[in-house]
Length: 178
Image: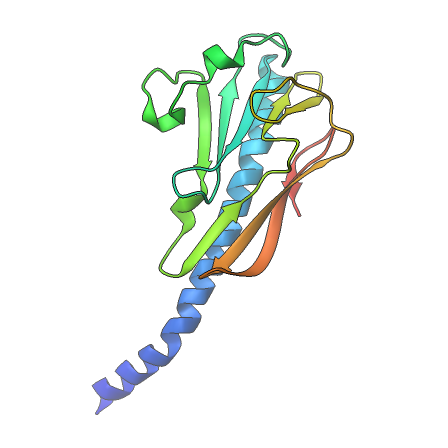
């Protein structure tokens, strides 16, 4: 009898537990994206080299952020096509200048996913040691952004968006969660 009561209680609590775990994964994903952008800024200031944060669709089109270290101190003087290795950070052992990556498919579970999207004009964000950022869309040329960048991060249950957070990258200053 007691075992049956415990099983009924567990069955009733399971959906709420799964939902709270999904919320926790979404928070962790948002903070990992913020950590990656903050690392780009602080490493650029510390080491005097440009750092490039790239947004791609990732393995399951949920989004992926990669952080690459440049050879010089300016975004425009680096040959990013030679530095950024095809296949990304983990897929290629030649990716020696890849610093870190966050793949949002890692935060998915049954029925719950987290995805990040990039602003149209900024799939590549480059951080310079003088605390300035440059943006480019795809392999285009870098330009200074007119305003701060927002990367929306959504938690989805099935295909329904339930909540939205995001990564806020100011023109000058520390990236943070919004």
